[in-house]
Length: 306
Ligand code: Q46
Ligand code: ZN
Ligand code: ZN
Image 1: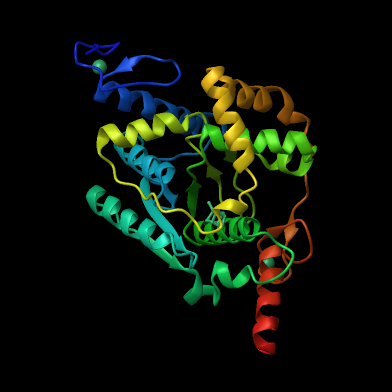
Image 2: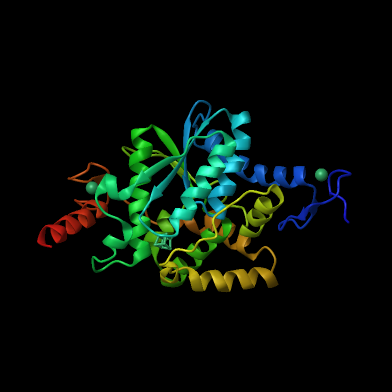
């Protein structure tokens, strides 16, 4: 068996980019360094002190969020933040497994998992909201998750940390570019500053390939949920995922090049947008009443009629 590139230990796995054999310790270090680079970016370029801050880690139980939780936990000894792992129970069946996995992982790390039950807190579940015409399941679900995470983070004076990967960013970039969707291009970011009633958020896996995440979970024996959402086929990025993942197999590193080109050369050309306060809830929005409140109103009216 091959030796680790950096020490005399046997290699446990090969990193994807750069492609080098690494032992368990050095593979973990390779993964931590990527997360650390975002933490340093937040500290030095956004002038945010992480020491003593609470990081709200958005979990689903899936591979990306489980890897993120473990990596952030390892780095918490160095950066002295505290972790607030949170899962939103959206009323989707696959999340039963996700919640169980999150509980197990949090228990192993000595962390207390927060579960936000959408039905008891807001009165509806995602499958119930989907009955309202005009929105696709994933657009409603994404909107609700973003709104709830922001609300909780603002209430707890926390920073939101998300598990979006390098692969996720490239699918979004490619789709938005192909459609000329300037609104999405403008909003695409892996670090978002704090605003009025808007929590800072960042995605420390933005430069990490999903294949490395799978390797990290495997060699560390970390459990994650394999359950699939019943609305998975509605995900608009599915075709882009298939194309880009096949392209990466042929042209090693293409996803990272695409993401970097976008953020370094194209992103600054996207127009800015002015935010105002929603007349109902007071959270930031581009219109008079935010989409969350509009959907919630529609739901209440429909329920009143029934
Ligand atoms: S949970 Fe929600 Fe995903 Fe299901 S409805 Fe779509 S967005 S696919 S991450
Ligand atoms: Zn090594
Ligand atoms: Zn609102």
